[in-house]
Amino acid sequence: MKKVHVITLGCRTNLFDSEFIKSNLKLKGIDETDDPSEADYIIINSCAVTKKAERDSRKALNRALRVKKPGAQVIFTGCVASIKRVGKADFEGTHEDVLRLFDIAPEEAILRDYTSRTRATLKVQEGCNFQCSYCIIRRARGPSRSRPLSVIMKELEILRDRGFREVMVTGIQVGDWGREWGLDLPYLLEEMVKRYPDMMFRLSSILPAHVTDRLVALYERYPDNLLPHMHISLQSASNRILRDMRRPYTIEFYERTVGRLLERIRDMSVGTDIIVGFPTETDGDFMETYRFVERFPFSYVHVFEYSPREGTPAAALKPAFPERIRKERVRSLVRLSRARTRAFYERYVGREIPVLVEQRKGDCWYGTSHNYIKVRLCSGMDMRGKVARFRGKGVILEGENPVLEGEIVGIK
Image (tube, rainbow, N blue to C red):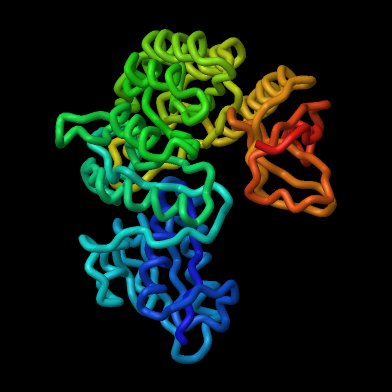
């Protein structure tokens, strides 16, 4: 029997795409292996969102070429392969091209299994219609298009039958789902909840414009199924920089929209992305962002150093500051982000919250709460994949990252 080893870089949508490919190869008699040196096929699912991500993808490709056994094929796919030809792999192409390589029709394929995690990821949408000045992903993924409701529901049924309790609903621009048919994301989520009321759903990254009253009302209606956590991208709190980035909102709209969400949904956790060091960002622009993060109740902030992507409008802009200033701004915002996360976690000391237990490290189990708090609990029981009632006892640091430590008070 032939074997495949898959290396995934980048976002949750890429995680889904890797699982999609693996589950369809299994139908062809090709099983997964954790050891690349025994694989007949090594697939690198690449990421191009930053220069570092692209560099890491190329490094993964070079490692695969070094360790592959005689006669094995190295396949390079994902966003980097969609943008440019690297010229080293035995085969390069899109995810659809990879399926065709194995005589699998992409339009007929569905997700058959999911093996990587205790929380599954389900892609409901692909591509993006926005044209942010710094982003190359639209070029890699193409225009926005929704996956059919019938396919999504069939894949949900498979995930439920495999024992998954929680599903991350993802896409490149997930809030665009259903636009082709006059439908919207709230419609999709309500259909999911109604058909699979024993499952929990978590949204991946979403734009503030997609946090509509219909969506918020749905979260109020199904608090046990729609988990109180959203990742709502900001990128900058300076309206001038948002315009330069071609982001489709102002900071006033963001604060008003996300503020209503936080007011209405109990335990709601909102995380965000910030890009630091956009070429036209002045000290004043950065301080607007810093002060906004300081006062707005984010539960976490992912801080990214601006990375010019060849072929994007922003790549032609000359930076208004030296590299050392950009790195100082990144370090400053990362420190603030960790402090905000710790403050959010401390609100749950002494409180009971539901937690999906995911993995064991040493004598302790680690998991994620309904509102995306990272927790640690010690138990001799096999807790993997269980939804537990957890009581926080205190916030500790693992490395530089906060973790809420506590105990199990029951199993849901």
